[in-house]
Image (tube, rainbow, N blue to C red; front, side):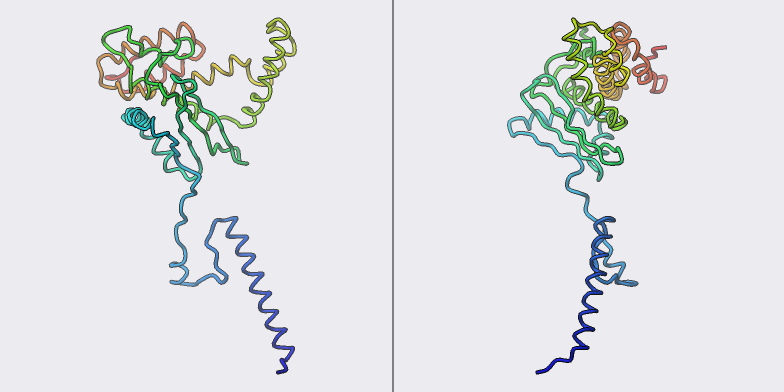
Length: 294
């Protein structure tokens, strides 16, 4: 049977037109994350076709906890969520469609924790971080030199003490403090510090630990401080997270000011340049609960 060439040509043109339209919509859909339709529906049909997209799977909170740690982890998490700050932060990360917080437990640094694997998008927005908790964070009180808040829970005064789940939750709050601070950090600055700190330390070890070495002075200026200064600044921001947690759970306790006074003593002795960070928290609540540092 002989087929007319003209209808075939018109059919080919129409097919090309549909393909171009569909391809353009696919490209726009991927960029705008919209549903794909070869021909956009109109009126009521359009309204039915437009549905809320599911939240990306790589966002929210991802808890990677081995079975042997789940019971203790749940106790620590429950304690952390007794605080107003803890609940607000957890809920914010859990509902986020732009950020992934991974929480896991390791035997390394058993009584401590760490926050790492930070990721930013092209706009400089923090989109991922990982908190690694030691498997025995309900034990052990760190030094007051860099950890004035967590150390304040050491049982030297029978009127208060923070072993067990309270100590573990305070350490979790410390790590959340790191995440909170990193979300406000310029990724270019963080990247430069990560790049230059090993170089600084290498020169320091090779020059007899002479911190006045012009090379080290230049590196410190570029980084915004020496490696020790950068590290302690980060740790004290973590301690701000710990203090926010303790502020919440001790709001109506009669030992609250005794606890805060102990924190103040350690801050005055070891971290005086950072005093304002902690004083603002101590003075933040209504007068009936405030423990003034002024």
